[in-house]
Amino acid sequence: MLVVVLRVVLGVVFTAMAAGQLASWSAMPSILDAYRLLPNAALPVLAAGLIAGELVCGVWFLVRPRSRAVTPVWIYTAVSLVWAGLGLQAYVRGLPVGNCGCFGVYLTQRLSLFVLAQDAVLLAYAVLLHAALRRPRIVLQEAR
Image 1 (cartoon, rainbow, N blue to C red):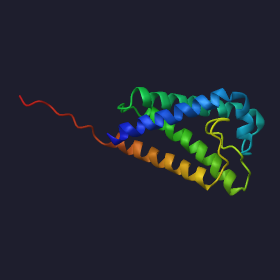
Image 2 (image 1 turned 90 degrees about the vertical axis):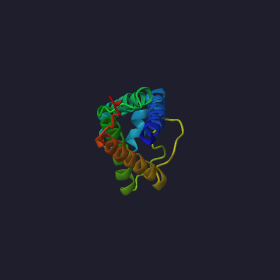
Image 3 (image 1 turned 135 degrees about the horizontal axis):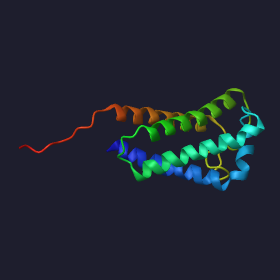
Image 4 (image 1 turned 90 degrees about the horizontal axis):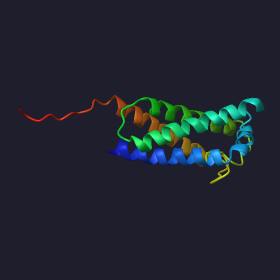
């Protein structure tokens, strides 16, 4: 039951992230450029990949929270790893990132230890989701 609630909450968060980024599409390349990791030509591709991943796993978690499919969990994990990787490398390099970009130009947060802690929590949730997929599903059968 806990995993179902977690999937719904993550579905809401990731769908909102995708919506905020889509509504901020024109600003996303410059937001991602603050991380100083990729050339400018690759930034729209990164933005599109993040938005698509967030939207797919977010909607999937909302529509099918009891699903045992591994695809949305791996997409969620990949998106969370990308955001965590972007943030961690920028923080270690001391780059001033005024808006982490998680929700595009909405609900802005500057890159800080708090944002990195949020990323760590999202990665911990990924571990939990993967562990839940490995648990055998118990099917109760009626006695004959």
